[in-house]
Image (tube, rainbow, N blue to C red):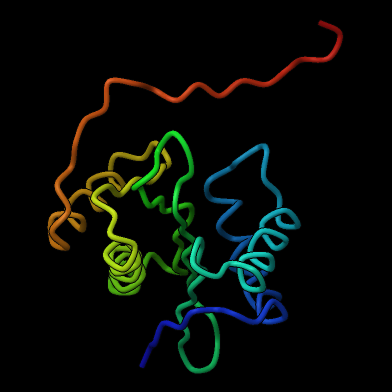
Length: 155
C-alpha cells in the first residue's frame, strides 16, 4: 500500500536521489543536475514553510515518487506552480495523489490559478489535462510563450 507524505526533514531528501536521477535522465534538462535538485529539495524541506512544499510517495518504506510546488512571486501573485512531479513506473494513481496534494495546497493558499511546465510529450500532456479535469481544474490557453535562452561563450 502506498502513502504520500510531506517531507520536512532535509536529511530524508538523500533517499530521493535515485528517483531524481531517473527523472533527470527522462526529461533531459541541460541546466539542472542531481546536485542542484537535491539542494533545492533540501532547502524546501528545511525552510519551505508556507511558500513551497516537497512530497514523496512511499511504498514498502521506499520512496517511489516525489512532487515539488510553491507559490509564485510577482508578477504572478495568486498562482501556485507545480515544479516537478515524478513517479517510478509512470504510476498514474500516485501522480494523481501528488497532483491532488498540489491542488489542496492551492486551496489552502486561496489561489485561483494553477500552473506547471510539462515536457513536450503529447501523451503526458493529455494525461495531465485529463487529470486536471478530474480534479476540477479548467485548462486555459495563454497568449505568451516563455523565452529561455543561454549565453554562448565568446559573444
